[in-house]
Length: 260
Image (cartoon, one colour):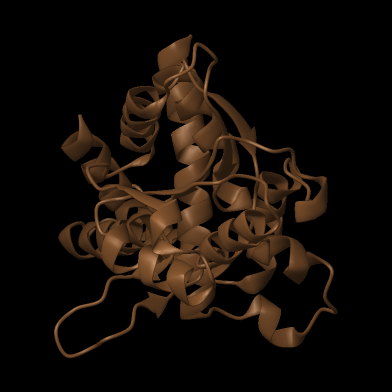
């Protein structure tokens, strides 16, 4: 199932869809060049691919598809967060250390790590759990740099996606829980990912009470900024971020279809 979902994510994303439309348009126009209708269909398909890719590569479209995802989870000050047994950070947004590079790279979702450190230093939980296959070499070093002691950090290193995040974190929490109460966690992930994370934890970690603690509001910040002409021009960074949003909407739709 993991590999099937990974295949779907690779094949069904804005760039792949745009390239396929353009390639199909070229193919139809060339193979059926002797027929005006086929030429028209080919050119139309190619044009649709160009327009599709352009739209998904713009900053303005980040506001269109990203803000509704983030807006469901308004930003909250750490002082207002409840206390819990642990803070759980879902993997992503960090590049792992490797030979020749002593420090992890902070990518777009590294806000998750910062927010988890804020919650810990505010005394909201005595334990921080990182969940992700490479997080020991990526998230943990930054947590330590931000003042979280290594004795307060636990690593769940088996998960490869959000479903596995939920299942393996529940196993870890239940194994460590010596009381009869359900463990309570502050769930830290990007605001645009929180809705799907909530779905997965409700399904795959039903014995854990979790409280959303969202971070990373890039689309929301852009929505409130003054508009510039280049917001409507294609940019690689905007395409990358919109691909993440596309994945979230696709994942939510797929989950809704499977649960009907």
